[in-house]
Length: 143
Image 1: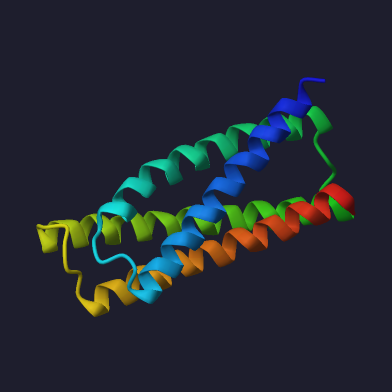
Image 2: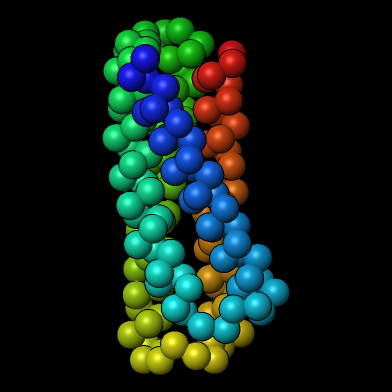
């Protein structure tokens, strides 16, 4: 019975991160956001959410038992874990880009169109990879 709250927290954290990255992608793409402040604030939520996802993912795996890597389920899990590692690596780059842009801009208003485009692409790529992870999670959950 303890697995249900862990799974619920896992799904809620993923929903918050997919929603947040999609919102930032769309807002920077359409020029609705012209500052770094929303992205800087979201990065804190993003990394906290990644921590929740990692710990609840381990909890989910513990509740299910370790799969054999030779099974279809185990192969799908390995693919999902590889994509998650790629997401984390790409997100580190995105966060460092944001920190560097904050240092360079030295202000939080009137972003250049090039930086806004770069942020849009970075958050769009993050959202796309996260949606791919959701698809792999669906395959794992329902075969």
